[in-house]
Length: 313
Length: 314
Image: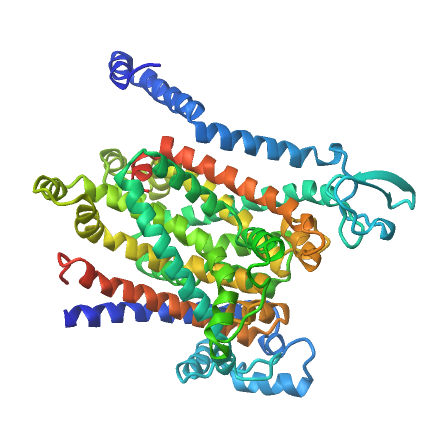
């Protein structure tokens, strides 16, 4: 068990290292002077010279990576020349809305998708099953921002139930906080629901043909116990896995959703940074998002131990 | 309609070459009978025709603007000034934007951009993914380093890679296509690699090796043709996701320059006055959603027919 933990942790290190190399190379393999790119379009020559000095641009590439990576490990992601603050600080300032939006989305998605997937698998080929499969193809196809505008138009503009856009910090009271989060979370959860429901359906369907399900039914267990305690419990691993993999979709969706709803989170920061050609911030945000993604999938792997006692490493 | 058993006896009574023809014909007829392939394929055909015939469909130059015809509602009559300075009467079927450009013409011409980007991204990522996957699967010394790099790319959310690359390269049709294609490469690579690893154990590859066939010929002549079906399916999905990503990039203002008539660009311009003129966002949005849906439905259909093992899994 402990050996597995160590091994699994050790396996994520090379992935993170390669991510770091890729993010580093992003700027170095681009034609042009990295110092000038980082400094931005309105930088003075002295400023560019100073950045060149800091990056160690006169040294070989590998040494430059060493300098940069050393800084990253120390928590120094560089300074944003657009926002005039440290990138790490900037990320911390913007993390709350993104975290709130993501958690809200995952909760909605799991609460909707898992029961739907189980029911669809239970009545395979039934109307719910066919509707769910149709919905999931649509969920994958409808662009997040189109869905966002449809919801804003109906719920906020026509019915006037929820605010059109904006964000309220949780410190300002739970009511306004959640009212601003409902629409963005529903928007973002649709594609996630499609993904999770599909996998839940397939995974539960597989399990339902197992002998122990027939045994459970034969001994007179009520159907809901069979579905939840026997089928869903044994189908959990692929479902948890897809929730983890889906975080990549979620991060992509956050960038779009935050822009549409005017939420000042990390996704909005990414777009602002790109529009301002603020490369230290772009690098920092990409590194941060990738780190979170790898970390979540590490946790997912570790959770197999809890969900499936057959897995022993 | 022939039952599988009947066609098997039929195939057995024929020579191998004839049997191949029977098998191929049955794939085509299965494809033609699958409702997903029919609907998705028909929709794609229609969109392709729209893209090709854009100038003939009652459109004007999508970049033309007339300050006198700003913010018209759908169906309004107005005027538009051509490049020669001549004013022509024009019906704005989908209204006009705040520059006085015809939304209908922009949406119709936008079909071109979306289809080109979708198709090109699928081709580029499948091509590069096949190269990488064949190399990783067949040249063992390359496997480890190559797959670790692919793991790294996969650990970065694709849309962030695309956004960052476009920002670095300055947006053009080519840079947008390459930037969207790159994050799709690892999935193709993994697919091809896993196929190669199982195919290389097949007797016919072993036979080719013992006959002294060159590695190059084995990779491209013997192994590659057998990866075609799953690759077509994967390519279709990549096309759908690339069309979406391009629209997202344009919508966020980091994609193709704003004078390009892309669905994302039209929506980005429309969002400013979304409350008064929601149709500026909805018309391109509907085209985008329908196109992506058509490609996905086509992909699901192709998967059901060409790759039944995969179809059972999801």
